[in-house]
Image (tube, rainbow, N blue to C red; front, side):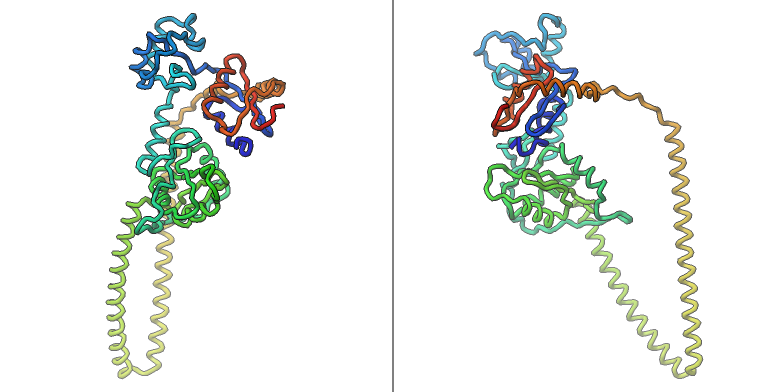
Length: 418
């Protein structure tokens, strides 16, 4: 699977390890650890388990079977003082890979991102526990109801002056935004997706893009049929579709459920009132017309009637022209006022604008560094072989172990190791 979609393995390696792909060609990837790299895993000493348990509940469940194990060089017991060690033990810890006494420090912002992604999917349905990707766990769409009684397509309203279709630039930006997003749903069946469509509509109230993963190992899955039915049920725009993912955009005319219901009620009330007024006006007009025709036919000759009709038509034309002129003048005045306001705001913003200094990207590398790292990496032998399981915790640990001594890792995804 890794060899079939190397772009996906590229993204997974960068996200799970925190490294940077320097070069990729065919089934070979060269991964750079970064300038400020620190080995994330270390062993917790037997006597320090109580102190570490205050920072994180996971470290309280560590076993004492392996006895007193020394911390790795990433902490630097010989170089770091006692104050630094106490600060590091107070930081929250996360259980590592392999040994039960192995833990790592929590990265800054990691907990907040995980909570936000988890809250986004909260209440949409049961999670897919056999998920093979990274956190958070997506919603299992196969466990959602196949038919929802009373389900109907969402009410949509396009703002004035906005095109309903997406331009090429908008499509490319939305596709780029959808690539790093975690999967919201995992789907395995081809038809009967009303429950999934209702969950997608709830998700669209918080996020503009819904990403659906096609389950692996399920027989007779057809992403084309899935995408067609979801597009018909939700009314969204299909951004990308392949054998693994379906990405849907909610559209420019999407409205939340509360707003759409309120607009529909107001429209229904307005239509009823207008129909009643039209009926009353038409009945009154017909009665008056019949009376005028009867009286005028008896009193006036035919020539006078024609002259009066021509005068009435000319007066109506003049009134319509005057009304059109008034409308255009009012629109021009409003446009000029808005233009003046915008110019004033731009002047104020230019005055208040403070030029910020460009931050130095510590993780980024220059083209010269990339060229030299690629030259060194091509001479290396493949260190790691990716198999059917793809990028899992064991491969990530092997990369970190290799990064202890070298800056690069050469990865090969395939059966042969040349």
